[in-house]
Length: 319
Image (cartoon, helix red, strand yellow):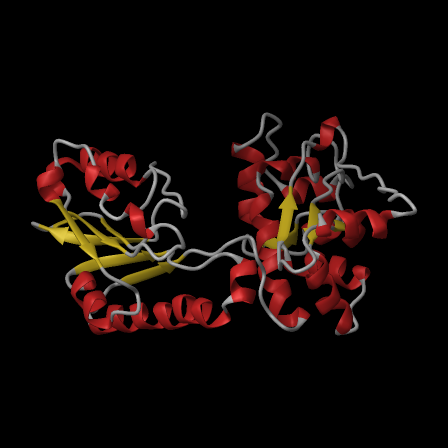
């Protein structure tokens, strides 16, 4: 699998060339893109037509125009370079014509830049995305995938927590053996929330215990999938939650019926989730970690700041 990095380019689309899906790179091609495009061309061989839509908008990058033309590949005869912007609707319409799917990563990702120039951020991230979606809709593009970041958005816990719970669930796969198997009930998923997320959650009246309870109730998966992880992904295969519950090794809530689609939690109880507040005060970041429970649990240590921390910080900022 070829991993495509957001900082390398911003748009990828699949174009049908002679009845075979190909790749179309789009918007923001800098730095390592030469190697990436060359690898794409070589990877898909004669089946691929690659088009690159370049929008070099970063400060100080204007003098780099032309660098992206140094792509080295024996297949550069199938490479088309176009310079345009996400705000140029006609260019977008031409770019997505005949495209099967689009992976949209174009954005101004810098939080400080968004404070310094909110209009530019809004135009690139909101107007540009809207223009791309409209162009795709009119061109009957079958699928559009929009890349996100580690940030969480929403103005209430009810809007934020579904995304957080989904992230926690996806991070824990074979580690479920520490809930049922190797050391029953020892899985301790760790959730790290930035301060602004916690403030938003607390302002709505939610406590840490409320967050743990939400994760316990919603970070769940079908029983058949839980058993598949245990049976196929670990070296301590357990094929039946029913058997483990009947033996008294796990709580009865893991076997409330014979329905393989019943939703089961990933831990024994809400307090098994660990929650930490850390990170940039202004970033809406959320990170979740799974661990190898048989080796021990994640731990934290309080950091004691020096008494003159405020003056030291002020001096560092002014210097």
